[in-house]
Image 1: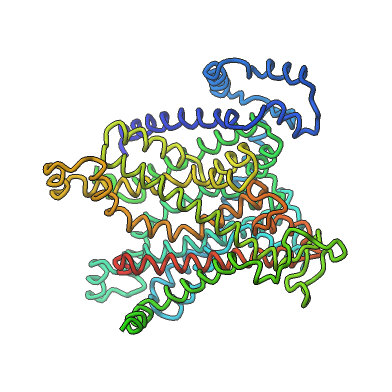
Image 2 (image 1 turned 180 degrees about the vertical axis):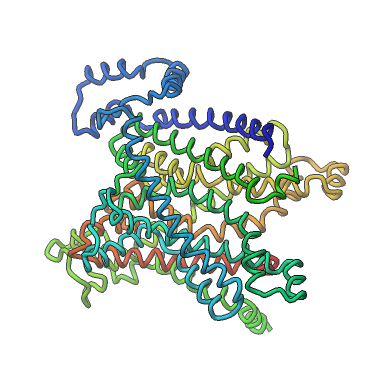
Length: 312
Length: 281
């Protein structure tokens, strides 16, 4: 990607970002009923009308929509995402505190995923239509069909309740707390990724240069690791980038199951307590992080595949 | 004669036929739930029989309200299947329609539709769905709306790219020159050229959509008590994991088996409708 292309991409991202911010802000408006009343009720407080009126005025909910939107946006751009109604803390602080545990979980599960799926995928491609291949394909098929929250519950049942190897609640501090949630996330992803690795490697294995190398008597092992594998890396990196993104959102269910103190868990509790500023902050942050990751993945193509540089 | 034809179809696609039969059986189980459960009420429990392990009277045990889990799992198929089918139908129709419009007309219509699609796709995974479902209020209908909002862009993009492929071919130009009107063009030329690929996508998506809806219900943003639904049953069972593991094993198994069957069915359908997809593998 040239500088100009990156600039164009950034402009496109800006348009999408504006849309995202409007959409995020609209979330409060979509809410049926009075948001202020919802917030009070979620706190277990029965508010009287006077109290509601005061809070409405304080939050500026009586102003026209555009006024509210631009005020909110202006504050966001200055790093002020408001104060959580339920937790009485600035939204930025809450999100920052939870960001690292979630990233840690995402990275850990990706490492596990790579360890599982790259060898399995290569193996099943090299032994295409042999028993190993069928076994790997069968396993990946069940892997994509099992809901991750059920896997998580089963893991807790066996490792925490029955065997008492791990604590039931992951406070997120130690490595031990990280293992089960990361494995849970890795299982479904590994199944998908193994298939992708297999497809990518197969595609390369069937290309002409491999036939040529074989004809010249180059050792099969050398062809595989010197040529085929590096060439099949490009689609794999795309997949990897996309999976970091979907992980950011997909962790919430697993975080809830393991009571893991991450972003997703925070978001779910924010939603159940109608904590609007926190919800808006979370949705906006995750969308921005996701877009940045996607941009980085695109830029990284340049370094992985020189063909991409020449093509443009 | 007819029998022979059927036999050859089975010979040609044994996996598809087997999983189609299994899928029909699951749908029948949902429809005939009262018969299968022998008239046991899935929402009314017997407080004298709370949390009993599986037995001959209650093959899957009972839950904290003394409700029969077997009956709840069978009735749960109704909620899961109907909501999944509605969801897939909605995103299929909406995505295809908007995608064809974008691809056929191009220009600002294309720009508006595709930028909105980009915005929806800028949210990873379930993030927006959870926020929408949570804020609209917890119900199965809102869960369907939430997942639909984030899922239609995939179909729109696919339909758009398929339309753009044929948009400038000679036969389309010929049809236009001979005076075909726009709605006719869309219906007779654009739609048929996109529908096969999109049907395959929809069929292979059923399992995944079912899991997403179950995940929302599991988090409490979907089906509400006392409606039997697999995701929310898992959530109830979570609190009794130590004392009553059967409360979470059977609903989870039900989701798993159903998703496997529908995924297999989707793959089978793809192999039939699009034999090329198998060549590379």
